[in-house]
Amino acid sequence: QVQLVESGGGLVQAGGSLRLSCAPSGRTFSSYAMGWFRQAPGKEREFVAAISRITYSTYYADSVKGRFTISRDNAKNTVYLQMNSLKPEDTAVYYCAAKLSPGIATTPVSYDYWGQGTQVTVSS
Image (cartoon, rainbow, N blue to C red):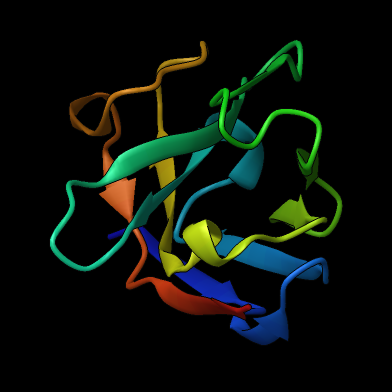
């Protein structure tokens, strides 16, 4: 059974930064391509960023491009989402997701495992 544990959420003022972390357990971290999604109240879960398993290619939603950076550290078994220049519209529960197929994916159904989520609140 794979478990994903997110950390790093919190309350921040607009323009501030946060770094989210996610550490899978139960299988070698390097076996997964990883993604971050978010869900605001009353809205569907939406794609934020993804990083591939082998080439470490990255892909971002247009809404976060240039502000967020996804990265992975296989030695620490952790994937990160560095979020800069945060806006109130970034407020959501952020979810880490893992998939065994190596490429990038932007749809929730493509992912095999999910974390419980971490709340990010950006005040104006």
